[in-house]
Image (cartoon, rainbow, N blue to C red):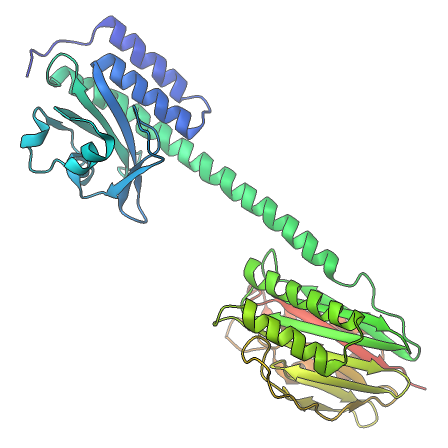
Length: 421
């Protein structure tokens, strides 16, 4: 190595200048480029690169470097001279790269370049964690010396802290964008829910939905048809979040389109199911209720495809029928055999309750679920009120039961009451 000398005034001022710049808000790639340029200038290196450390994949990667023509270089944090530096958290100064056992010749081959000497400096954050590696290649007048190591160490310590801040800011901005996009998606999904339920003579209808996340895997709909009939839908895609939200939104659109074409319940089911078999991955499906309320005959004809339990509260007896699913969920089996269960006969005062499992399965602090019986107790105790009020009573009882525990799943309630004579 050449003789060690103190820092020149020019070098000190250049380091102070870049330190000042690194303390200001700056884009990550711009910061990396600034660090590389200054390091090359003060240490007379031909090339320089900042490799960032990807903790999740245990890899080093570079987005910015001198003559870096490829979009990104990425390799194991155990490979090459940079890997040794990352592993030991110590400066590695190699005077003859090709004679060093740890030198990775693959990158030279990729870049069409010949490396003579290397100076690798670990970038260590405030808490001693690895942020990346600053690597300089080919000093113009020989090999890197002790002064170069000291300059690189000073520059690297400033760079590491600034990089930590920049990456945290970049992650924050990305998270904020995701939050914004999810809020838009949630607003779009909410606008798809009925603003008000159809008005049907002799009946009181209510619908309500509360997702567990920004977007939910539940959706409901009520479509007024000719002859005082209403098509009622409740769908619940497995899971919650963006994926299930897209699935149930697609399901709603298919059912609405088929109903406008005059399809009966069997055709509604057949068209939607076969399309979902094609569109959904094998581990995804949708449980759903599609039913037709005929207010003239006071009947609900339906298919409950994996959607259960269904609650039919009978006002005359104060008791309820708990109905099971009538077929498999949508999206599992093409051309699924289908038998329509017997219609639900709505007597005066009867209430038909479509409720997703987010209500039934909401647990308290001890893991005890709200369940069907508690739901029926609320219906029995408040069934004489409007259905909008009954929705609020059910939700309030669930919240009280949960006792502050987080909402586990999307919650949806659709109530149909035949008004008393």
